[in-house]
Image (cartoon, rainbow, N blue to C red):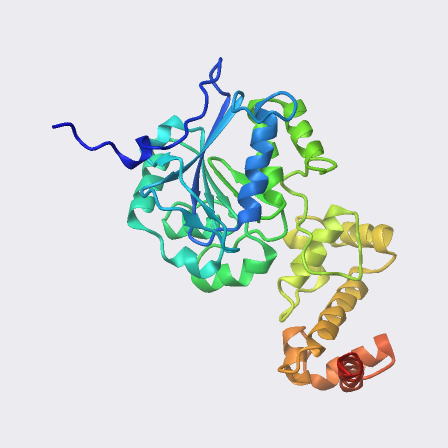
Length: 347
């Protein structure tokens, strides 16, 4: 009696065999409740680089969704993606890309997936963490000694879960030897373009991004967009400095500390701020903290004292003095204006 056929050989559409060996082969692992946009951005760059025009044939590069089970994997938005094949031998791929999503799901790492990732690392296959995929790689014990990129939005989540590793949250992606991590969202397209340029060529990478209406590839050290800012800086160093402040809002580092973190002199940072914003770093940092305080005042669960603590002021009085100088009113009066406007809209 013949042995039953494995699930990944039954009723599963196979891609056409390319006339030549692909130059880039990607295997995807999708976490439960993964971020669909990050996965789609990564895949779209690959498919547009794989063929001439917009025909999407997997010729110059290939991509497969891997799993130990035939069950579809549901994304955080509810759309499910079916795997293409079993995890098998990771050495058949040039990269294994782990696409994460909701933070709580990263704590439920299946031992079979962890074992597969360790086999890939042992075989020298580079590992890529997209969105909270970096959480999954670290939970599997595969990020020790490596720099790791996470979204500014999940920076504190990472610190709460892992000790001894400070993630990079002011860049769109980080390449550290055979570990590549990115913040997710649109940065997944830029990381995919980086791999396409490395293996296929710059023209293919640029073509993919242009078809996706992305003007140009961003470099790894370009800053993440971050929280909404009233200060719009084009200088990458200035933007990274502002993001560093945002990620440490409750205990804001001074100008000298931020300059040291960014590996520039204080004087250089001051010159760049003046050229980009017409402000000193200290004045710009204060504006950012007050902008965040205004956002928090719209939340009725926050007292002024708590908002002061969360935005790095000594106490409510300190916040009130700075707030009045900036806006001409107090935090409580500002909040009443918000409540009044909301009531008028509701009425």
